Length: 243
Ligand code: IPE
Ligand code: IPE
Ligand code: MG
Image 1 (cartoon, protein in one colour):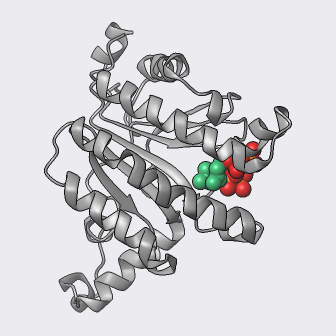
Image 2 (cartoon, helix red, strand yellow; image 1 turned 90 degrees about the horizontal axis):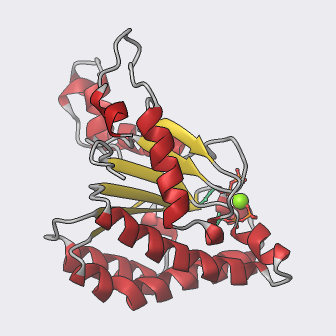
């Protein structure tokens, strides 16, 4: 399937806990299984020449979970970055983390910084992990950065769209397609600004069951959509000819 018209896919990877429950296992087991889906989807996106993939791994609201689950998730991130960073690097993937890093321990921060540094010049897929990320945090953070830098828009008391965008955690590239697994129809505070005009695909498939075939179903949905951005013309009619 041709997916050359999709540059950027984002995913709310939901349903690890329900997947584990279904199999009679503890929630942690579902989170581990979810890492396998990440590997599959990263490779699949590279093969399909997607330029950018942004994965929602831990929200600013997920701290409300029981302490043992939060601790498990953070140690799983630490372990997984270390385990997979060389493979990602060998596949020319550029890794980037977005979110409020101020709450993380030094070991996790070191793994994050090392992974970003090692892969910074890679030119294949750009892979963004959103951890301790919230869309509202992102917009507030942008304003605060603008204030601190005494940006000209602040001096002139006239903040414009492009000024807010300049300071967002992920700027310059909005997802074309947002996928949410596991049956809920909500954004859960994921990139509120950047998803303003993304196409959204919801599936009941739980994240640990999400694979290349499920990804292709989402891409197929995207290729059939009409993108008008408020106008009356489909700005990308050629997309549907590929579908
Ligand atoms: C998504 O799976 C992973 C994170 C939010 C960290 P969940 O843990 O939310 O799984 P469900 O929604 O309870 O099934
Ligand atoms: C969204 O899933 C966050 C991530 C996938 C990281 P949640 O399971 O936290 O979302 P809600 O609580 O159902 O909205
Ligand atoms: Mg969930």
